[in-house]
Length: 514
Image (cartoon, rainbow, N blue to C red; front, side):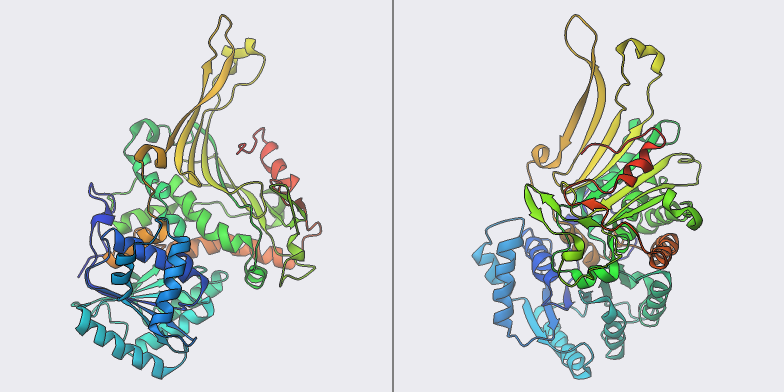
């Protein structure tokens, strides 16, 4: 059996490890995620020889379909969304023979019994040895039901007593709606699963640049030695999207941006930026350090919440010169909705490394461009040396771009050639695509492969999830009790409400221009 304590950063890439034989069962397989992300990821893993030789994928959903119909739909999806195009016909023909469709409602016992029979037949036919990955690509309300039925029909194995085969469950976000619901969900799951069998997926952790954060920090002493409050003035993390909510009005009215992006994605980025060096590169050693970061974040003072966290909602405006409607005009949205589509905050990590350093986080819909980045802004040089220049020098800034155009850049000050001594900021820029000449794997490729290998390094552990909910649940409760009086408070195509600028500028800082 593959251990969960693998080494994710050893010299040979994890993607060069071939997983053990297994069957992957996707619940809710007719949903959007399956076609856009999961099957393109599986096809690319197959194409590059990273799926186990003995493998099958079973789609579990409620609609009536044949194997052939579902395979044809997934071929169209892979042709549309795969990072590698066009699809190789011979490869697809071989790969598609391992794809099966199983119709059942999530509550039907007969459906799970017939699934059990199908999986047993696939074990005998394809040599998958009883190993299972169950991917819950369903609405969160179905997570408890599906796991209970899987255990009831002996499709999930007891982690402590069954050692000749394994079963793992991948759970899509959101993991709960607040702290109480997250704890309730965890308590339910622990009736049927061991923590090491639960893989809480966050696709941000599968991105190449995010993974490189650990390598970048801990293998380059030149940066790690100045990665602290002696040299860093502030840290800015931005997740901006041009798009609105599209057809997700019902979901967004229940979730909002703080739940959908900040509580999970941004906390993952923050913890990797701020964590201490782990004692080893084993999964739990890395996750231990991430949890310490989240637990060290100073709670927001609810009585003065507006001083530290700003919420916003987009109104009508223009994106790329085209008019777009406001959030309250979107389909399935309350015309008086109080749901936030933007959040900006100042937070502090109370530990020795980061004491006194503000971390500024902002995320929003209908902003001017799509971008996710981490900016480490270093302290200014002593001003008296450059008083004759007549203006303040630009701060040295290290920028880690997560998407798009993944890479790392460093801004520094240099003298402009000539007889005078003007100083101008210049940028050293590294881009993954241009340097390595290859498209990095999609996040879901890495994460699916890691689950099959049994490496849970890039999946959120329960204590990390709960620590994040403890931080943000009081904020959500406050917002629910005190409706915003100024929504919408920023135009589509702008960088959010003016209060977000005040949040940073009151201490003489400013948001990085993107």
